[in-house]
Length: 253
Image 1 (cartoon, rainbow, N blue to C red):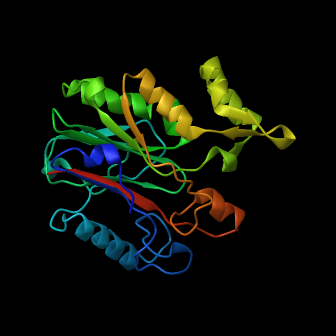
Image 2 (image 1 turned 45 degrees about the vertical axis):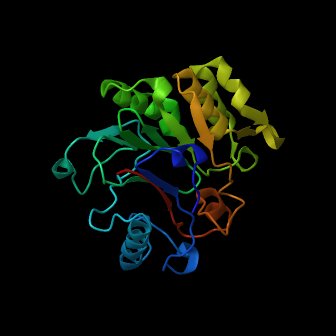
C-alpha cells in the first residue's frame, strides 16, 4: 500500500495505490489481482476487491471501476444509481461522497485527483495512447465544468513503468513528435534505433501545462519491482500467458 503525502493532508479523503501483496490469487496473479478482465479465477478477484474495500472501509458500497480501453473517455456521475455494471472509459470524476472510484494498472500510469475546496475527486488510467489522445485534458475539463479551478487540484501520479524499461520503436516516437516537437524531450535514443519513453515525465509536464501546480509522485517502477507490482511488459518478457492488475482508489467521505 502506497500513499501520496499531498493527498494525505486533505481532510475527509481516503486513497491508496495498492501493491500486489496481501491478496488470495495464485501463480502469476499472486496475490492482490483486482483485474476482473484477467484470466484469473473470478472468485479470487472478487475476494481481492473485497479486501481492498475492507482496507478502505467501503465494504457496503463497492469500488467503481471501468472497462478500460486506452481511450480518452471520462465518466462523470452525480448519482450512484446512474452507475452501470459495464461502463467503458479510462477516467472517472465525481462529487459523490463515500463512493470509492478506482483504476487498474500494470505499467500504465494511475493518477488520482482531488479538489479539496469543491470536494470533487477523480482517477485516471493513463497508458500512452490515452495520454496522447487527451484523457488527461478531458479529465481536467470535467473538473472545470464542475466549477473547479485547476490551481486548486491536488494530483498524485502513482507507480508506473520507468523509462529505462519502456523501449519503443520509431513509429511510436513519430506519433508523439508529430503532435508536438517538444515531445522529443521525453525520449532517449537507445540501442538498435529504439527509444526509451518517459511516460511519467510526459504526463507530469502535461499536467503542468494544464495549470496543475500541486503534483505528487510515487516514484516506483512497476517493471523492476516484481514483489510489489504487476507488469504487462515484464509478463511479455517472461512469456507469461496473462498478468494481474493493481488497483488505485480514492474516496471522499
